[in-house]
Image (tube, rainbow, N blue to C red; front, side, top):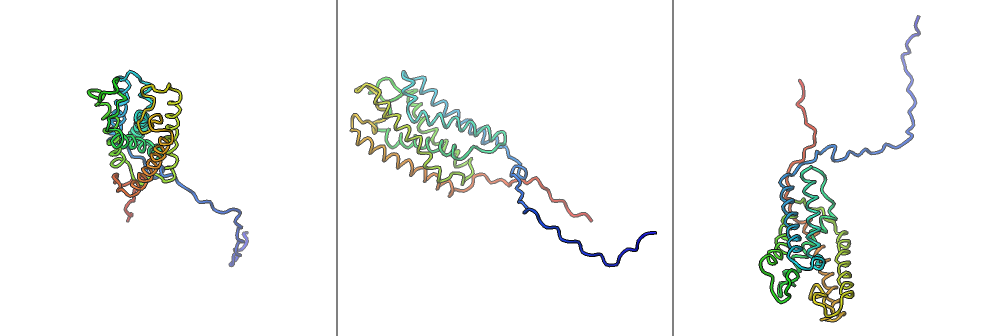
Length: 262
């Protein structure tokens, strides 16, 4: 014989909450699948090859490879080739892009290379790629100059404008990007001190020639260039946040709504 079922069931006491509910975060990769960009990968591979070709030609046709490699233009092209090659691999394999601090630095340095060449060094033309310091670059030397200082910077700017989503550069990185130009200036001054005075090519750039203009004038030029480079970095960040988005594809979430049944 079973006990009678009570008509009124007493309310159960509330269970006290022992801990707060933690918000759960789902990574974007679990919702939005990565997208392969084969066209961007191929174009960036061509850009990396162009930068590498300019560096290789510069080292082949010169009789002083170490002195040639000491130029800012050679080093910025080497950095751009490595960064662009890594970016091409990530675009091909649908991986996350490189950090904007790295890509922004490569863009800034190659832009400095192009601007300094065309604004400060085209008259007289830079002659670090030829043996005779009184001769203007011709033939392979002229082609190498154009690859390093014109073609590659312009292609890098197009890659940034047409293949890179906007709003990734950060203003706080502008000061960090100045570390390399500052270290390069110290390298130039130290290199000149270690070379015997009156040696040809002791100073790689005429506007940083302390022997011809004096140390105070050289430091003033270096300070003016540093401020100009920082202003250029700030301008690139501002343009990156103001330019339109060249990549307009609808992100797929991986979820598909089914029509109601019945």
